[in-house]
Image (cartoon, rainbow over all chains, first blue to last red; front, side, top):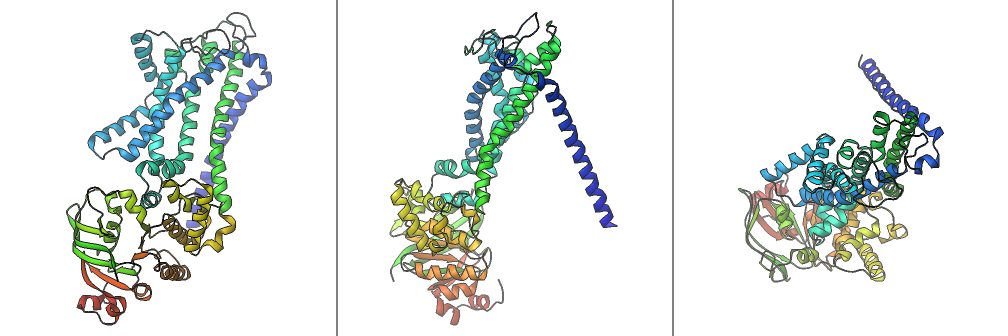
Length: 284
Length: 251
């Protein structure tokens, strides 16, 4: 009887898992299959068009990477520093407990709230208008709690024995963090960063509110005060607002590009961790 | 024999729990001193006081004095990092870093500012030789330390401790997680090391204390019950409680 139950349970779990995997793959395939065959370099790097067909996504694609880069430049050092503080230095009191709850809460706040905050700060208070700078900073705010949380968890997960071994050899706290805790938690932190970048890359609500739905209309525009429509926003824009006749194709191709890049992030970011794990395992 | 470590009226509290009660003893240099006693008797706590690892446990307060080579290690101007460099420690569970064998041994010297490759190579080799591990690992120093067996890992941890040239080596039940053969190797190693180092070991295993140590201290409920030459303590204990413990009546 127990064996039968075990078998039924195993089969159920497998079936559910297979269904989920099939669903995900079908979704990926559908999107990639519709968009990829008609992708051209002209589309990827070309300028968008407002009225005629044949417009590209060049500036939007560029903005996506540029803003992601800028937001990570802001969020990664701050988030990792805050995570280290919470894991290693923060006293164990009610105030820190509250900070921790706030960080956790912020990590799950809907992104549009960060967009509204970005408007209030950059558009209204600093009178910047819709800019790449405002968008990147707002994206950084969005990711900051996630990165903080991931870093704190990753450092806490490092076995206590390693920490003790380091201190017992006469290491200072800083040396222990730099030489033992960070290297040991790096692969978990990097996984967190890759999730955060994927989220930032695909984010639309924050960008629409803080960086706008237009680009400056030229390629390789590094000006921080240019409007900063990204690919995800462009996708939303052509699908819902645009009047170009080939809006459907543009959105399908954009979706495929977006999806492909986010997938690529997940793979690329993990390569260093894989190499590390492989080297450790190879020795075993 | 000359006393290297002098403990005077040491009292230690974890919060309100009185873990060590008025302990005074001298530990001679270049010999093995074993701390024995049942769980919770304070032997590990005293060991961790000698390199101030207890500082890491919140709510610990220490009163009294411990002098190592004449310097009060709980004094105001003591450099805790320098103290821990001088008083090495080997833990109950082998705890090599997830780094290569080489980097594990070089970890301590690098902390203390040695960067020359040549010098590090020398230290790594002499430390691994000192811990009787060199012949087993010399051909794959780049391998992960985690690929070694438990006994090898523990000897690596000893090598890592030796690499910063301590005077004192603390062993906190260093063989309790190991198989009998690895245990024997570590015991033999301790015998060799006492020519150069002052060793203090905590052990659960009375036979181990009897086999390897020169002096033995028996602890009970945070107090020293008896401190004597090992042979004397095991063959002719002065205190009834010591006799009960070593004859296996409790603990």
